[in-house]
Each structure stands twice: as C-alpha cells, then as structure tokens.
Amino acid sequence: MPKRSTTVDDTGAAPLVHEQVRIQRGRRSGLPVIVAVHSTALGQAIGGCRLARYRHWRDALTDALRLSAAMTDKCAVAGLPNGGGKTVVALPPEATLGPAARRALLYDVADVIASLDGAYATGPDVGTDPTDMATIAERTPYVFCRPPEAGGSGDSSTHTATGVMAALHAVCDAVFGSPQLAGRRFGILGLGRVGTHLARQLAAVRAQLVVTDVDLNKRPLADELGAAWLDPDDAFRAEVDVLVPAALGGVFTTETVRQLRCAAIAGPANNQLDEPATADLLHRRGILWAPDFVVSAGGVIHATAVELHHETTDQASHRVLTIGDTLARILQDATRAGVTPAAAALDLARQRVQLAGRAP
Ligand SMILES: NC(=O)c1ccc[n+]([C@@H]2O[C@H](COP(=O)([O-])OP(=O)(O)OC[C@H]3O[C@@H](n4cnc5c(N)ncnc54)[C@H](O)[C@@H]3O)[C@@H](O)[C@H]2O)c1
Image (cartoon, rainbow, N blue to C red; front, side, top):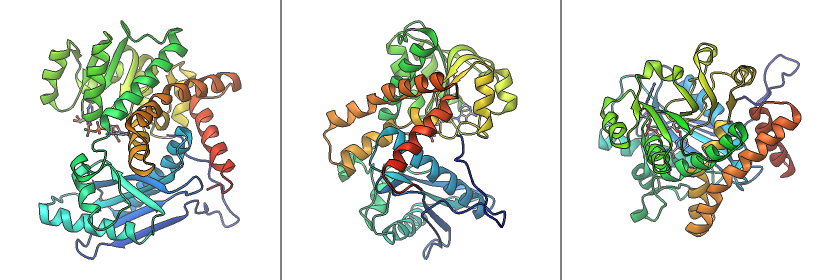
C-alpha cells in the first residue's frame, strides 16, 4: 500500500504522525502488546488485533504503525465515521499458545485497549478470530466481531468477499467496458476464509477460475467448483483477466510484477505492494491495481455499521456494496488526473480526514 508522504524535520527525523502508541509488556503474558492509534479525526480509531510471530518486537511496532495508518485510509475512503488503529502482539518465533496462555495474553491486550478510554476499538485480524474478541470483551467493551451468540456480528469474511465482488464489477467495467463477470477469467491467490467465499461467488456467476493455495487441502474446493489448480510458484504467471490476491501482503515486487500476465489486480489481501513505488510500476505496465484498502473494506464496513453504529443488517449490507461505486469514482478520478488509482484513493482519504478538521 502506498505510504503516506513523510516530511522530515530540521534534525532529519520523520515526525510522529500517530496520535498515540502504547507499548506494554503484558502483566500476565510477559509479551509485548502494541496498540497504535493513528487518527481519531473522523471518529473512534478501529483496526484488528494481530497475533503474529516476529524476530524482534520492533518489527511488530513497524507493522502496527504502518497498518494503523492504512486503517485511517481504509475508513476514510469507505466513508466510515472512524479513524485508524491497530493492535499487534509480537509472539516469539517459536511460540505456541495453549488455551490458558492465550486467554492471559488476550486479557493483557484488553487492558491496554481499556486504558485508551474508547479512543480505539479492536476486531479480528491475522491470528485472532471472533472467539478471541469475546475473550477481550470480558474486560473492555471496545471490541467488535464477537460471535453472534455473544452479541457480535461474527466472522466478517463473507462481507469482505461481497465487497470484493462489488470491486470486481467496477474493475471489469473500467478495463473491459462491461461490469459482467460471467466468462471472465479470475486468478484467486489463497483459498482461505475470504478466498473461499470469493471462489464460490465467482463460480456462481459463471466466471472462469484459476486458483492456488500453499495448503493442498484446499484443492478439493477447486475440483468442486470446476476451477483450474495452479502451483503457488506459478501463480503470478497465470494468464487471467483479473488477479485476486487473497493471501498474504507484500506479494507485488519488481520481480513478481515483471511476471504478471493479467489486465488488472483487485483482491482483499492487505498491504499487497512491497513499497508504494510498485503502484507506479504496475501502472507503467498497463495493469490496473485497485488499491487494497478500498477493495478489502467490506468486513469492517459491515461490522462497524452493525455493532458500533447500530445500523440494521440491510443498511450494513447496502454499505458494503457501495465499495463498487467508490472504486469506480476513484478509477475515474485517476484517469482524469493522469495519476495511479492508488494516488487518487489516497487523495480522497486525505480530503475526508482534512475536512473533519483535524488532519492526522
Ligand atoms: N477476513 C477478512 O474479513 C479480511 C478483511 C480484510 C482483509 N483481509 C485480508 O485478506 C487476506 C485473506 O484473509 P483471510 O481471512 O481469508 O485469511 P486466511 O488466513 O483465512 O486465508 C489465507 C489463505 O492464504 C493461503 N496462503 C498463504 N500463503 C500463500 C501463498 N504464498 N500462496 C497461496 N496461498 C497462500 C493460506 O493457506 C490460507 O488458505 C489477508 O491478507 C487478510 O489480511 C481479510
């Protein structure tokens, strides 16, 4: 994802653009819990809780800073009355968490979130799920996506997939002159929670599918849907209309962009680009890259609408579909201004945050 431009002060240091960052060694777990609040200019900061293995906790801090800033852009572009934040817990590389250790760690996370007095609310992310959110909710109300039986809106991946489908219509309209998905060829990288929903939804509208996953247990799904299976190492060379990254971030690099044989890229994976300049590289290659922070917002749009802003399920579902209109507008703005879609999307985000009167 393109980084926000960073100004450098007289000392040569980049200024802190985040409103607050808490780093605390968990009282129970002894693990580093990091909560970054990038901006509350538009409202309460929101962003998932990531439990991931890091060689050094400072790497987790870097992730928290980057991901919380990206959440500000995601919320602003989605038109949410929320800012961006993130929780990252740095697990040691060899760590395994048993149930008691996991609960202790989640209580540590909850205590840091509670200490922010509502400036930030969390949700599931890599390494956490709705059940973990129910555990956090035992100690703080600032949490969303608890299981429905615990009063939350549950797993958001179906809504994320629905938002990606809306984005794919907009992308096909911009690139091929028709929003129809039937007969188009899509390459899905990663058949996890979101990728599986997407594969099913695309198969249901008679799109052609090429799919891959490092987990070979996903292969029967490909057979069930009549999708061609690719080795993950060949994924970037797939001859498809649209590539749909639905696994990890950082996959588009100078090296992988060179291999691509697609007309466009649009998928839910967060932080798809290794660095902002890769958006320019894709643009120069004539490949339309739909910014991930626009495409992947369906889950957070739905969860916050239902749980934090008490909208009906119908209102929330309607909001998810507006991702298509938002992306269409961004693509038009980009064409008109002669800039990349990434630049146009960031511009829209900045305008909305600045309009709120307190730029991050
Ligand atoms: N779940 C959501 O609602 C949501 C919302 C916004 C963004 N995202 C992002 O979308 C992506 C997918 O999320 P998810 O919830 O489906 O995750 P997931 O963990 O359920 O699925 C990821 C899948 O990718 C596969 N994978 C990992 N490395 C791979 C590789 N190199 N090649 C091919 N497959 C690979 C995994 O085996 C797994 O099946 C993530 O980047 C996530 O941050 C998810």
